[in-house]
Image (cartoon, rainbow, N blue to C red; front, side):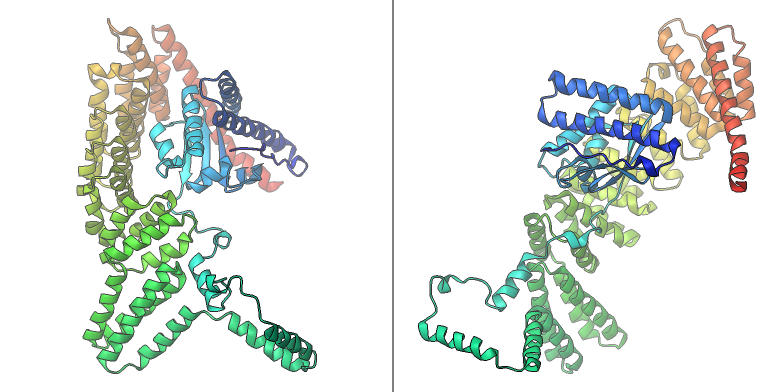
Amino acid sequence: MFEETPDLISDVEELQDQSSELIKRVQEAVNFLVKAIKINCIYPPDNPIPREFRNNLFKKLTEFLEENEELKLGVDQSGLLFQDKLILKEEKKDEGVAFALYRDGIRELSFHKEIEQEELFSFLEAITSCLKSSLPEDDLVTLFWEKDLPHIKFSAVDEFLTEDINDLPLPAGSKDLKQLYYSEIDLKESRGIEMELPARIQVERFLRDLDLVPQQELNELKFLLEKDKSFEPLKELFLILKEVLSGDKEFSDFADTILLLEKLLDSLVSQQDFCLASEVLVLLKNLEETESEGGQTRRAERIREALNRAGDKERIKILTQILNQNPKLDLFSARKYLSLLSRNTIPHLVDMLGELENFAARSMVCTVLENWGEKSIELLSKGVYDRRWYVVRNIVGVLGRIGSPQAIPFLKKTIGHEDLRVRKQTLEALSRIKGEEVTSILLGILEDSEEKLRVRAARFLSERSSQGAFEFISNLVSRKDFRDKSQEEKKILLESLARIGKDKAVELLKKLILKRAWFKREKQKESSYLALKALASVNTSLSLEALKVLSSSRSRKIRQQANLLIGKSHTLQKTADSRPVETEKESEA
């Protein structure tokens, strides 16, 4: 798939001496990343060659992160950026790593300190799988989500085809219609027929006589030809019907004109001319509002019928087929068209999500559903009962982005869905909704059988200042079986306890640090160390005093760890205190 090594762009001369070395190191790390991905695509995973490239990448990346905490990269469709500088340019943008990320909506990618080797290899596996696969389900956002990469974060958008619209091809249907109108298509009946001799003589004479025509007449002829060339029959028909509507007095004439507009709309959709189709819908919506305000109930009702017909099940099915057959279709204009349809279209768009084969098209439909917002949650929520897990997950995502408490009853149903991917999406959706009711649901997930869900729920709870959450987590970490949990789960629970409770958590954390056990001592030592780090993260005078007390503990390891954390706390405090002074000096300079 990859034929050439991407060129790394370096313009060291224009950068300051201090940042040029950093840029160079980032370029090296990204170069290792791209090479590892390319080798992964070529060789089987158990081959020693890709294994060596993966190990070299991990070594280079961890060395960088040890000094810089994180590596944050911007994603463009033709390359990767660092601090707004292009550091990786891909010549074949439709085949590269950056384009794959950009295509699936990822706009920022960052690697963080303490990344584990297995986590990095899972990341490489996800990208390799996406580059090799032709399945629409294998988008990078989904693959990254399934891999659960705590030290690799990304920022993604829901709709990302609003840029570079001019680069997309024009709809083929309208082009063919134009060619047919001007007899530019080579019809079967005309193939092989040569011009008869008298006609050829007539043409020769015409060309000879053309030299005798005055220049002014030639200019007028050229103007008429250009005007005729730009003629668009469907647009002309639209303008005519628009004019006729304003003059229709009788309802029967008005209804006939509306019927012609309905047929025109069908033709425009089949021709994939969503821009002009949108103009027709705007005309109908404005006219419906005018007729309603003017008391013309019968006329307004006929227009509403036309609008409902445009978004009925049959026409959405036709549109689905068009989107599946044309993956490079102008989705921006298609989104505008769908957004203008009536709310009665929502159930059909939900069904549409289950039939669309292209990730970008599904993302576009989700954006349309999201834009209908809080008033349409009842119609949207029917999608949570769909038998297809991916439809349920998409609808849950839409409900989460709307962020309305009205969605909570439906999200309560999907949190127990049989598919883990749906449950993860539900957890994400709940985290976007404020209120104690959601906090209560998240606390319940801390008892779930799936560890990944428990860890995510704890992370989301750490962002909520809730007394109920503090008390629940306090009881959880005090239980005897707490030490048996994984290191990651214990870490996030203790961090959440410290973040929510602040000074209220200090005494409990001290108790956990000093706790002893006759059995499973290593597990208990691990818990004590994690509690010590959580205590340091409280970062108040009370927590610092507690660390000082622990620095005199009888346990040598606790003393060492406490002193180390006190030192780090002082360093951070000095750094924070010096920042305003440095800023002031810079402004004076």
